[in-house]
Length: 328
Image (tube, rainbow, N blue to C red; front, side):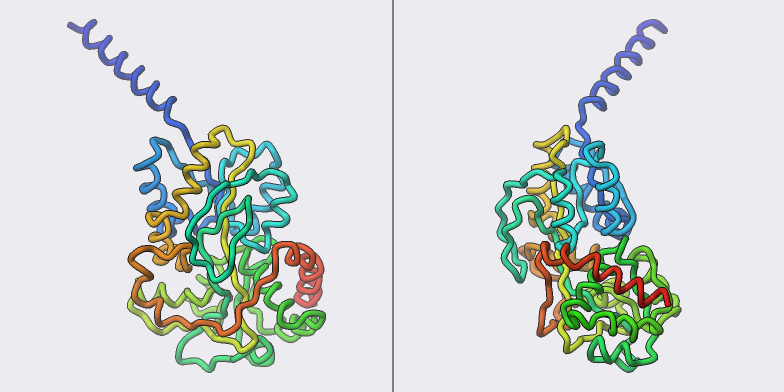
């Protein structure tokens, strides 16, 4: 009797081990807030694993711009199958690594711009903005903010896509006069954080009057907390746009599974998760539309965005201007 029970248990363990070994794993390298318990990661993982017969694993790597630095360091040794969280300010540099394969996907996107990139697919988009308290005086331009006594928190452009986005925003508005803008706003900056989460936390803790974030950030407070005390300041300069993307690593051991994930990423199941977890506009508006509350957000009259090639061309110059002003 004991022998029969023992052999049955061993057989069961072997079958379970075999089943685990046969389950393919897809590793998605992304930014930390995507993988957090309040971010899109948990819901996306559950929804994709329902259809993929796989183990979807998200690997956090700091903020968005840090993803590129990690890829450049790891090169072909990277264990990522998908990289999710770069934006168009980084795709030209990412393409230069030679690590990405064509996605081959066509999708009915609702981005406010055409999409022709053959290696990177968008999953959401938004506009950068400074977010402050509704009862405070609001500047109406970057210059007015820089000339005020308003204290702000921004992010490091070397590790954070919002931080890099502000560099491009200043370049689009001021061009060769961007150094003067950075000189003027330097004394407004309370601190520079590695990523968005730390900066937004400092703002909510009252450490600054405003934080570099998105026009969609107030939707979180309104929908999740029924709190209308946070607003995005609309600037007459226009607002710089961010389009976040994902790409398939060419050396992946599971190319078909990676393709399935990218197809899923632009599906209604994935896109409907984005507005109330990543608090951005989805790349393809879900069939049920956007949640109530998004209709209250500011809609910038002027959209600013550099092409990936132009963003790459001015990046080092813009970083040097930023460092020079903030090091004084």
